[in-house]
Amino acid sequence: MIALAATRLAVKRVGHGYIGRSALGIPSKSCFQLSSLVLGAKYFSVTQPHRTSTKPSQKESKSTIDSQADPHTATTSVKQVFSQQELEAARLARLAGLGWLAKLPEKWIPYAELMRLEKPVGTLLLLTPSLWGITMAAYSIAAPVTTFLSVVGLFSVGALIMRGAGCTINDILDRNLDNKVARTIERPVASGRVSVPQAVGFLGVQCFAGLAVLLSLPFECFYLGAAAIPLIFLYPLFKRYTYYPQFWFSLCFSWACLLGWPAVGAPLDLWVALPLALSNWFWGIIYDTVYAHQDKKFDINAGIKSSALAWGDRSKPILNRFLAGQAISFSIAGALNGMGPGFYIMGTVAMVRLYQQLKKVDLDSPKDCWNFFTSNIKNGFILWFGMVIDYALKLSGFL
Image (cartoon, rainbow, N blue to C red):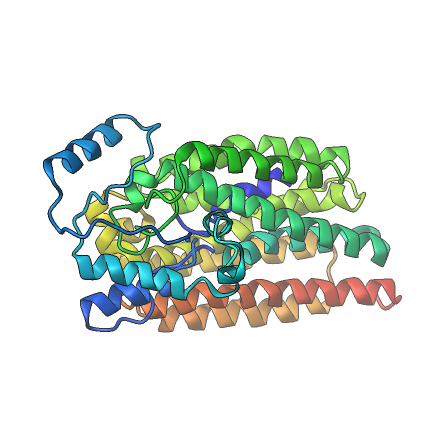
């Protein structure tokens, strides 16, 4: 279950959930920043006033330099100078996007924002590969419904907790990048509303909660989850030093496919689990690359790397090849697991739907990219629904 922390991991993200980038594309610059943050979900916070001057004082400049020199010091400075109107638009957008979190006690809100609780997209995308693995494994041994449902419940709680932990790690390590991008300047650590020591302490609480969930599962899940920890902690480095953080992000999410077998009491069948994980890996790169196209202008200035910047106008042809890889590896996993008609019918529906969405999406439109990203929740659940159909048919004696 610790593997679920990849969320990103959800994650620049996810929320990345993941999460989110600008989404309305309103011409006015202030409105653009506002819409960017309202719909941002990747992958939050009580209000603390930002500085009102658009020109930092000498003292502020020195503070920024010092905070950059010491990576363990939380920075409250916005390195990229935004206008007062842009900062106010970001603040108002954050408040407007709180939703039900606004009803929480004021001191709790920044920590709920660290977990991206108001943005469930990343949690659902993290949960999806777990559901695939659980259902494929349950089908293979005709596991009882009670076992299936209890494991789905535990993984759902674990995904929520560990996606939040992944976002917290990301916010701590990326605080000096987040304050360069309009979409992320209001994040709790980047804006200074939560200090680094406070965020680290909260991360510890989340990890212990995740451990409690993990210990509720068979021991095999524990060592599989522990093996994913290095993947999780290395993810934030990839957007600094490579143009392919999406590859590593998707690897972290795909690891969850492996845990389904021991979770339901089935022997881990790598002949099925690995193609299934590979299929999710291809899929994650697709939706996260489109996601990254939302911030490409800011990312260039902030020095953040992504496959969106690496591939540019070639993104669609390249992603179509990844879609072919997803379809092939998904089919191999189904064939080796002896899946029935539900798997292939719903698999075809999801793949055709994803192909059409990829064909239509405007990679220069933040709104289009955001809609594409969030719509992938449906694609993942369509694929899962096909597995559930076959599982039900097997338990009923039809397969």
